[in-house]
Amino acid sequence: MGTLCPELDALLQPRLRRARMQHTPLPDVPELRLWLLNADFPSASLNPDEIRSAMDYPAYWAFCWASGQVLARHLLDNPAWVRNKTVLDFGCGSGVAAIAAAKAGARRVIACDLDPDARVATEVNARLNAVELYLAADFWQVREPLDLILAADVLYDRANMAWLPRFLEHADAALVADSRVRHFSVPNYHRVGGGRSCTWPDLDEDEEFRQVSLYMGARDR
Ligand SMILES: C[S@@+](CC[C@H](N)C(=O)[O-])C[C@H]1O[C@@H](n2cnc3c(N)ncnc32)[C@H](O)[C@@H]1O
Image: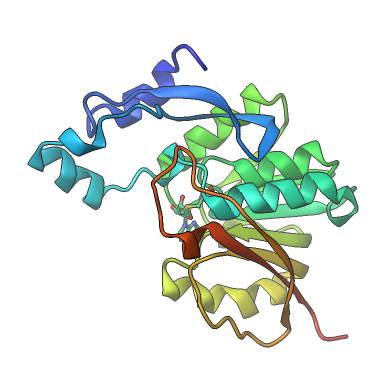
C-alpha cells in the first residue's frame, strides 16, 4: 500500500475530509499500480455535506472501474492490439487503460478526460508506472491521426453512446469496455470478449456491473 500523494489528496480532501489516496496494485492487473481512494475509507459515516459533494463532484478518477481493469488486462495480454499504434483513451479517469496501452507497446498514447482532476490523476499515475502519456481535455483538441480509441466505463452516461460512431470517423478502430448497457447494439461494433472484475476499491456493485464486455468497432472498408 502506498504512503502519501499530496497532489491528489489536495483534490480529494476538500470534498471528502477523511479520504486519502493510496497506491496499490490492481487485483486483476497486478502489473499496474494506481493511486486510488483508500480501501478503508469510512463511506458509511459521511456527513450530509460530504454526500452532497460526492454526488455533485464524483471523483471517478479515485477508482479504477471494472471495465478499466478488464480492458487493461486485455491490452497487456494482447499487445498486438496496440503495438506501435497511436492510441487515445477516451474518459481516462485514473489513466488505467492509457497506462496499459503504453506498457503494451503503443507508440503514442493520448489520455483524454473532461475532468481536470482526472487529468492530474492520470499524470501522477503515469509517473508511478513509468510511462509517457499526452493529456487532452477535449477530444476535439486532438488533431493527429489515431489508430485506436479506447473507452472504458463511459456509457454510464448514455449521452456518450453518440461518441461510438464518431470514434470510427477519427480512428481505424475503437475498443469499448462496458458493463452498464444491457442491449448493446451499435452499427460496426461487435463483441470480441469480456471478463469479470470489480471496481477498485470495491464499491460492492451488483454482479451485473462486474461482467464486462469488450466491443470492437471498425470502419467499413
Ligand atoms: C467511470 S469513469 C471511468 C474511468 C476509466 N476509464 C476506468 O475505467 O477506470 C468515466 C470517466 O469518463 C470521463 N468522461 C465522461 N464523459 C466524457 C466525455 N464526453 N469526454 C471525456 N471524458 C468523459 C469522466 O470524467 C470520468 O473520468
